Each structure stands twice: as structure tokens, then as C-alpha cells.
Image (cartoon, rainbow, N blue to C red; front, side, top):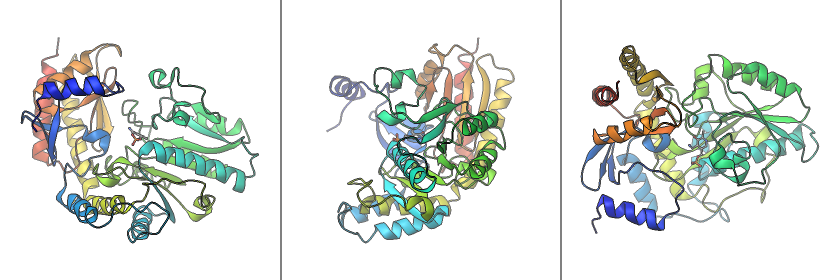
Length: 410
Ligand code: PMP
């Protein structure tokens, strides 16, 4: 049954919880860097489902893995072994250089998992008194919206009236190594430092060069787990397989989600070495769907695509072009004040207040002009296309973006 955009939006508005504020575009098809709406209008996807569709929409190799596995075995739960899981776990452990994997489904779940691992490790290996472990987190973080995660969020909209909150987190400014050192020295109960290598949802904030390496060194010195949330930055998005690799950092605990499955199926994972991961014993953590055969098959295919198609190199190369061209544009612009990012995770800052509708209106206009992006919030627009984009396509997109911005110049 074909449905119009207006009908789809009306249904969603009537029957769906109002927990999102989408752009008024109703999509029904995707291929590579393109998506189509129900009326057949074609768009460049410049969001990639918040960096999940790095391998492009409906990548044939990932879809083949999905459909093959879907006809064989989809779910056993973890009550039994299945023939795909161990193979997948070895593949992922080798791929990222860790001993062990704990498979989950969503990014937020994986963050929760990492917090549990870190706390258990602190009690068993560091001798911190039970219930007293503290994890350092950063201002303006985004790690998801579960009750524990919102407990250390700055986003009042996501947090207010959802208490009581979970204790055990110390918040420090991002990209501030002195603040980290002070926080570590403020208590003998510090167990971990949870950090996004680039803050995505906050507005694509790239920390100063050396920050992550220095933070990792501090953690090592004080026997604190360095926990990298690479849900958004990982899987080649920033021009390396992992964003921490720009500074040659290997986290103690690595959190992955989104693009580990190319956006084809919900897959997330926490990786760590034996000395850390072995603190989790049977029955202490799990998920019915985590590590199911379908997830395993899809994630292997999706990670193979990243390597085969050299998506990290492509993100690196196209990212440089993107920022160069936009920096050229803003030299004479009153509307855009800044472009920043790494690889193909970039943002522009609109010259207006955070409360203004300008960024939103620009995105509405971009959609009319055939390109989909969305403000992270306020006056910042994130640009994160699938990494399978060609240079020619990117130049076409830059031309759409700059022409659209011109309509907003005063
Ligand atoms: N961590 C980071 C860094 C994220 O960007 C996100 C999602 N934007 C999450 C965690 C949460 O992932 P999910 O929406 O899959 O729960």
C-alpha cells in the first residue's frame, strides 16, 4: 500500500509518542549515499542515521549476509551456543585488537555495560569499597538516554523530571587535561574515565591535539580505566577505524554501536582485555538479542566492507576537501562562522543564537534542495554522509550546501 508523506506524518503524529522532532521528510528507500521519499524525490543523506550507515544504504554484501542468515537461524538467545557468535567475537576482537567482546544491541546499552564492567573491575581489582566507585565523565557528553546515562547528562530536556538519578559520576570540562588530573586526585575511588573522542551530539567538538593521549597516560598512571565511547566516531567515520587511533590510543574499554552493522541491524559491543572483561561472570549481564546469529552475520559483513572499500581513507580524504571548501565559503559569509570536524564527521556553526530557528530553517531548505541534514541542536548543523561517497558526489553536495547557505546570507 502506497502512502503519501502527509498520511505518514499524520499517522506518526497521532499514534507515535512525541519523543522526536523529525524534519518533515518521509523516506521509503535508500541506496548508497542516497535516500528517496515516498513521492520519489531523491536526496543525499548527510546524516547517515547519526553515523550508523557508514557503509551506505542497503549495501549488497551486508544485505546478502542478512537475508542468508535470516533464512537459516535468527535467534537462539544465549541459553545455547550458536555457530555464528564465537566466530563473530573472534573476528571483532582481532579487528579491534582486544581479548574479548560483550555483544549488545544499542549504543546506550553498551555504555551501560561498560559502566557495569568498570565498577565491577574497581571493586575486584582496585579494592575500592563496594558502592563507592566514581566514573569521570565530560560536560556536554552524549552517551544515550537511559536513567543512569541521563544522570550525568547536561541536557536539561533529556534529564529534568526523570530523576532520581544514579550516583557515582564526576563531571569535568571536556578537552581539559588539568580538570581530569584534578578530578583523579580528588578521590581515591576513581574507577574510570568515560569519554567521546569527538563529542558528536554536543555539536562535533574535536578536542585539542594530544588530549586523548594525555588522558590515556593519566589513566594508566593512576590505574583508571580509559573508556572510549566510539558509538558515533568509530568504524572509519573520522578517517581512522577508531577516532582514538588519531592519537595512537588503545582504550581499556571500547564501546561500539551504530556502524558496526552498517545501520542494517541493531548491534553494539563492548571490548576489553581479559584482565578487565573477566570480572563479568555468568548471569551478571546479558541480553536476549545480544550476539544473535543475525547480528553476528551482519556485523561481520559490515566490518568487511569497511576494510575492503577502504572507508577510513575515503573519509579522511573527502573530509579534508569538505572542510577546505566550506572554509573558503565562510570567508565571505555572514551566516556561517565556523566549520570543524574530522574525516566525514563535520559541523558548521550558524551565526545566530542557540534558540533561533535559522539552523532548522537551513536544514528544511537543504532538504528542498535534495540534501538531508539536521541541527545537532540550536545553531549547529552536523554533516555526516555515508563513507562510500565519491569525490564527485561530495562536490555536488558542497555545491548544494553553499547555494542553500547563500539564500540565508544577509
Ligand atoms: N554514545 C554516543 C557517542 C552516541 O552518539 C550515541 C547516539 N547518538 C549513543 C551513545 C547512543 O546510541 P543508541 O542511540 O544506539 O542507544
